[in-house]
Image 1 (cartoon, rainbow, N blue to C red):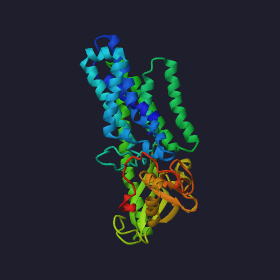
Image 2: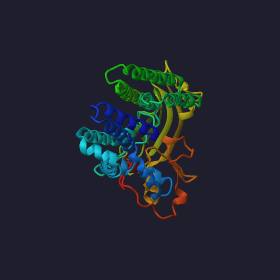
Image 3: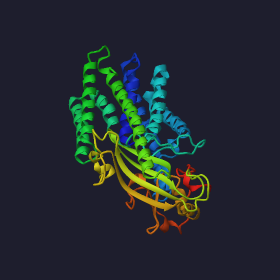
Image 4: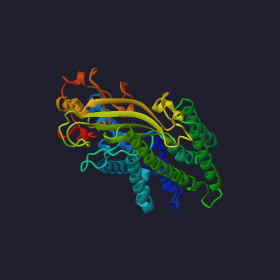
Length: 428
């Protein structure tokens, strides 16, 4: 997820934890606790992205592809980050140190907020098509949620509106409200968000603002947690809806592929959700065709086999939102031959033997294949790209000019992440 989302969620968790506890007996200590939990929630929710400083260890694009969402996005890494964050808080914040010495509830709240923020960062990053490998070193495999867009405004609104409602200065509060309304409107006008999604976001925002205003009449008044709890519930409900929609989308893709070529072996279908929209999906399918050995690619020498990659768009409810209405700025246009449910955008084939040969003879390709889930080759140009991030031939952050890199020294250090397409590559 983007760091704005991580930040808003972290602040929201810190505020929710603080408001779930009885107030500290001393008002000064209470102010310190509130600031402490907000700051720690914010930092913990962003700490795993410290790996961005490690991207310079390898030449582009490998540095970003292999170091970002790397060791700091693992459970082992999160333990080290937890100790670092708690240690820095104790050493660098005298006021917090005094509070923690005197208040057992504050100590428990600090630990809970820090752990929750770190785990939420890894968990939220696991929800999208990029993926994480949280169980390294026991399991270096990538795990992909495929169900939430990497920049998701539902989380902005779900946590941002309650947080803005708590700002005491009226002008600043209304400025935040205007900004949180203007950003979705702007991205909708730019073609990244469907109008129905915008309407849903605005309804959610108004509802949360109303809950926060109404909750001021309750016993806890301005320190009510009702709006934050409602925002958290709405966010969790959205993830649940996306999970159900993902299963429907996968079923549609598999059915369509079987009707096109029942003999092909489907290895993977990488789906990417649209923001605040459970109906529209873009996808890339990876199929193995022919050759010796099984269709799963784990046996045989790959001779005569090829891999077919298709890109497309689909709507799981074409009567409500046909695929032509899905925001073209994200997944591309549906094209004239599309049905209301599904649009095929491109198809590419390449020999499995070529992929295996490049892995064996070009150490840069071998490193790149530790990231590539949908590896597409352009042998004439000597470029490899991951089709999750763009159509064939379009450069993107995953594109690797492997012919130019071939004579250069091998990249080092290369993390030992699992190969997403081990089912095609066979044994080393």
